[in-house]
Image (tube, rainbow, N blue to C red; front, top):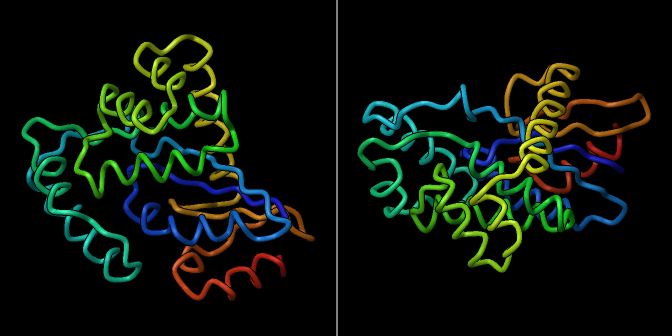
Length: 210
């Protein structure tokens, strides 16, 4: 069973779905493809002002209550509360794509690492330097160097991954992320987002029935 995961590394609900994705990746016969949508990247980025920070924190608390995923005080103070900060998922997405070029099997690992750096350690992964340091600290030395000074191969791969993910969103009618698309008996089908936050056995049954 091949499943495409549409996501953005700065999406709090995508972080909330992390444990479910990890369990899903270990199900026998499942191939999980990560599709970063660039939903909050580049032209879709925005300043981290007080109003947006308050909105984000309120939403994060809902996610924490539902999923048990932690959103630390360090994140609230250093990321949401950083003066002049930016909410831009391009650097973190670039980091994931860089790892994918050399170690594609580790993409889910690095997504978890980058999300943990933000939401648990309070490191602003909207900054290329922070993403590079995080990758280097996790042993992804080659990817860290490429992120620090992106070359054309990396930038082209980034654009291609984001473009393909956005096209997939449009094709299956996904209104946002996180979302799962399964290759099933009736072709490619979008699975309801709330299935990611319910009973895991039910999610697997739903995917197998697609």
